[in-house]
Structure formats: C-alpha cells, structure tokens
View 1 (cartoon, helix red, strand yellow):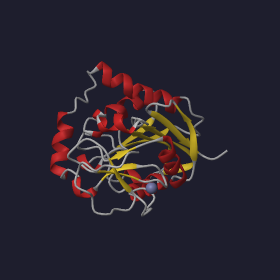
View 2: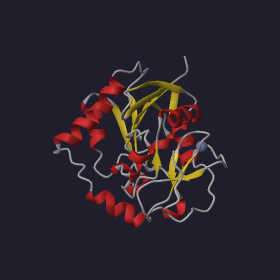
View 3: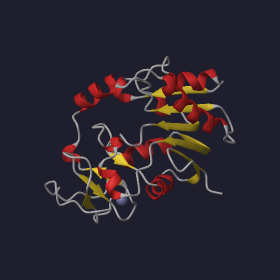
View 4: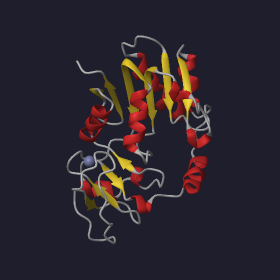
Length: 225
Ligand SMILES: [Zn+2]
C-alpha cells in the first residue's frame, strides 16, 4: 500500500489484529487516518479517529435494514445460502452483530435454523455467548469490530467443535489508489478493511482455516482438514 504524506501522521499504533508494531500509515479517505500491517495485511483506522458510539448508533439508524427491502434481503440470503451449503452437525446458528432489526435472524429461522441474535449495541442476546453453535454468521460485522482479538476469542468460544464461521464483508481493492476513493472506507462505522491474507489470520485466531471464498465479499472459515 502507498504511504500517506497528505494527512497528519498518526501516532504509532500496533496492529489491531495481530499486535505487530510494524504498521505504517496509508492513504485513505480523509479525514480519518488509516494504517496497514505488513504482518497480517489488515488495514485499520487509527483508534484516535474512531467515531463515538453515539455517532455510530446514529449512523446505523440511517441504514435501510428492512425486511421489505428486496436488495437487502437478497444479500442476506447469500449468507443463509452459504450456511445451508455447509456440512453442519446441527442447526444452531448465532447471528453475531445482528443489528436492531434482526432480519438475517428471521431468514435463518424461516429456513429451519435455531438462530440466536446477538448485538450488545442494541441490547440483544446478552446471554447468547453462554451457548455454543454449529455456525456463526458475521454479516457486515468484521469491518466494525474495535476489539478484534477479544471479539474473535468470544466467537471461537461460542463455536461447537467442527463449527463454521461465515463472514460477509467487502474485500478491499488491491490498488491503493482505489482504496483512497473506496465508499466502504468512508463509512464512519467501518474501522477494519480486509484482504484474504488478513482473513486467513482471523481463521487461525478462530482455530480453523479459510475453506472457501467468492473473492468479493463472502468467506467461509471452518475446521482444518
Ligand atoms: Zn497485523
């Protein structure tokens, strides 16, 4: 990635995913400052530039996450289809970061899954992580998480042996100049930007490996073979 001389330099910040101290500032949409980790390949927003939780919640309120929105339901259906294609031992699914509406939770239930919604930001499923699941769905979640090692440890603890994690997040452009103009990096609630190499690091932290990807926005992590 290209280093950034345009915005004020960020104070040194270790990688939010792997803890490496070798991070370097890269160009991204102003005014937030972005760092790249050569060790795990994560690009992340400097924590000093995070939105407040109140700003973040207000931004979520403007998302059109309605079960009446056909485009929204179609992209959530791709996540349900990805889970349906897995060799799961049972039908217990955790919708981690379900949001206020829980539309994905409803789609899973309509397909016969025993789906639990979990989203502390909206007070949903506070005891959901005391159970364990055959699959965990992270649909438009990984780009928001601020405590990556902590949240990934909680997700790993909620997985039954042999369980799978299905991730929906838009993979970032390889071209650094495209990243600078990327709409996904302008959303003030998005703080982590993923490549396949960074998601392979996530898979290791979850105790598994990347099992498949569509190369665009959908990645399946499962037990090692
Ligand atoms: Zn890293």
